Length: 337
Image (cartoon, rainbow, N blue to C red):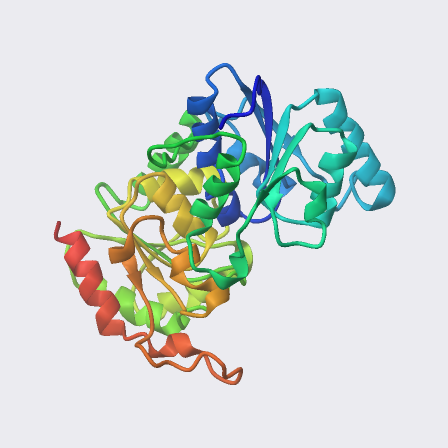
């Protein structure tokens, strides 16, 4: 049953890109359930640009946990900031004692979060879920917490704002690199969020896909991932965008691609959010497996090492067992559609 007169709801997700993108549909569900409600989202400084302009986020707040909100004094400052905004409810989608405590200290009347943490007594809407088992998708876990305050959703909707200047810059960069039509994007890094498919395999894959005429291959990544792009470039000519794009520009690039192939990482979820065709390369380890972290509702877009792969060994990378031919075949099937 819906909580009465919820007019100002706070959604909290202060971790990484993929986590935030898989929480954003909660905002849309809130707006559909409570059309007159004002929404705010508390995010880390790192993901503020990611969420800027979201049509269902009336306000974006930053948890500067490395700066002004660091330590006890910072926690009390954040508490005061939230208290002044007079929220009716808070959804703590990123479970942590610190965030649960802030909501309680701020006197937010309705506080929803997971039921099985030592600090769960700070919530008065407790949801029985154990995310560590990874038996459901992260987005579904988030929607379940939202349901605890009466949010209802017939379907999950992804929304994302790409400003015109980001679209224009990507168009200029593509033209400068003589790319006029569709293209393939390879994102070989993961920022440590999952086990990576070997970069040499990305290079071999790029060489195979380059044989198909009319589909240039673009490489994306951060500045620190430049060595990955260097390796791929040894196998075949590619167009490099590593270290050159803002988050919004990356979204514009992914949106207009023919196919995005990536490890388990935030940019893969960004590609899904903007409606791109994707292939996600995943380990079956519970902590980073596709059941929880795969591209949402796209089971036919996931490839993993073969059944029986041993994930317990720390001296080897089980992703090496994911066959290049399997990735190439699925890529060509998707490109042929």
